[in-house]
Image (cartoon, rainbow, N blue to C red; front, side):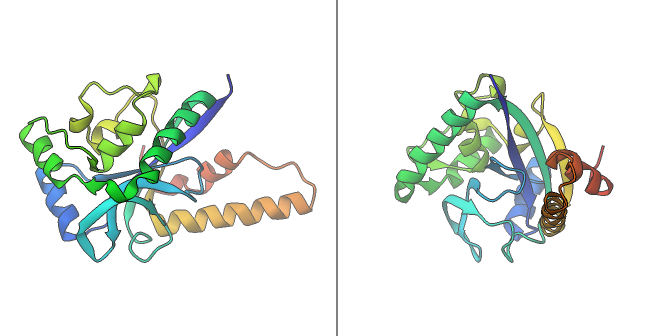
Amino acid sequence: MEERTIYFLFTDTGTYLSKVINYVTKQSLNHVSLAFDPELQQVYSFGRKNPHNPFIGGFVKEDIRSNFLRNAACAIYAFNVTEKDVKLIKERIAEIELKKGNYKYNFIGLIGVLLQIEINRSNALFCSQFVATVLNDVEALKFKKPICFTTPADIRSHRGMQLVYTGTLGTYHSVIQEERNVQLLTVENTVPKQSFIFGLSQKVKNFVIR
C-alpha cells in the first residue's frame, strides 16, 4: 500500500500561558497540531479560538501565517503512514469538526496530566489529547500512555518521527514559498525537478537541530 506523510507541528508562542506550561512540564514546544502537507495549508488542533484570549478554546484550524503564529518557535516532524491511515485520521477530524460547537478546551484535563489523575471529560480535549484521539486507530502511532495523559513530548519522541525543521514559523513559510517559486520556474523551463522534501531539507538544513 502506498505510503503517505503526515506532519506534526510543535509550537511555542511565548505567551504567559505557554511559559507556565513549559515551567510545569520542564519541556518546550508544548502545543501540537496536525497537518497533511509540508506547506501546512490546513493545520488542525485544539487551542485558542481568539489569539488574545487563552481561556476561550476548542477545535481550531490554525493559520501559520497569522500574526499570532508567524513568530512562534516551532519544530516540524514528518511521519509515514498508509493511505488507509490518512483516511481514518481525516474521518476522525471531520467528526469532531462537524460537532465543533459542542467541544471545549480541556483545561481540567491538563491538571489531570500534571497530577497523573485520569480525567476523561465528554467533548473536551487539549491539543495532544486531540492528536492522540484522531490517531487512535493508526497502529504505527499507538502511545503507551492513556490518551488523556499523552503530551506533545510523547508524540515528538515516538519512534519513526523525522525532524524536518526547527526555527520560526515565519521563516519556514518563507522557505516553503521560495521552494514553490523554484518549482514553478523549473516546470516552466521543462527541467526535471527535485522532490519537494529533498529541496526543502536542503534549504532549511541550517535551522535543523540534529
